[in-house]
Length: 324
Image (tube, rainbow, N blue to C red; front, side, top):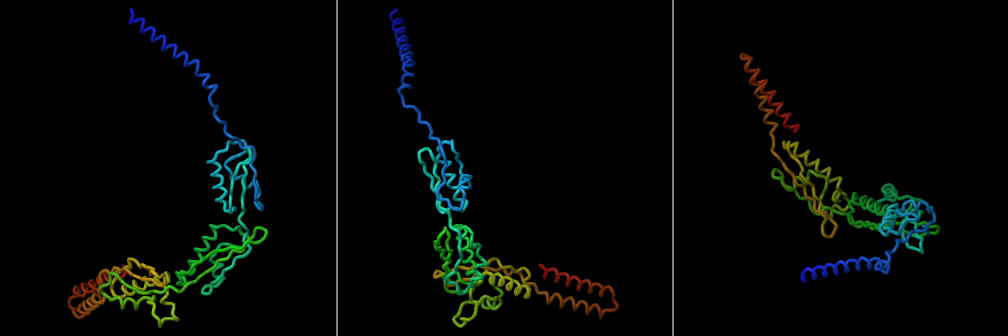
């Protein structure tokens, strides 16, 4: 009996504790901290715009009045405005319940100036660049034009050239775009080497190409300036030389130009595969002899026929190998 009563008392006490807990929980909610309500955007104000209308700026935003302030969506809105290339600076801030978008527009290009260019004419540089007066100044377009100018100088054999873009601020949010150019010295060819050549030495192959190694007595020549287009032409010259000498399977594996540490010259290396040499002259001479023998042995027409067939076969072999 005592044990049963003790168990019943324990159960009663436990049930009372549960009831008490249930009774106190609403009071705990009442006295606890209420969850904070998200702040709502009242208005979106655009400031700092001069040429660009406010509605154009608003069209790129991912938030609208009545939306909650969402840092992630506001950050994506800043990125979207930046990708337009219309603004040099974009800032967003809250002012009470308003979201303020403050922008600094990129200036309009007034004119484009090239300074320091002597080896390349201004007209040539104007043809290569895409920036034009009355366009919006954007860093991405300027960087692309810098690379185009450098490419012009590389084709002229000046791989040490540098281009520094600058701009001069003018009234009414305009600017002069200035490309300051340091042309640097012409980039020569310090050495020309060949890998894989066994039939002909390096000196012989150097005579067959148009690119020359830089030497002081070639001061007035341009053949010793590194020119990628000229190197490509030299590849075809090597192929022509080997083919004319019976190497129908010849090929240029690669032509690598490595800039010297002082950036003044290049090491030029041609890797080639000569292939097998075919002696077409001996085949033709043999065919001619067979034809001659067949002509003198007039008593045996079958011999003459066989000789002609041999001659024809030799010619076919010659043509087949020469066209590989």
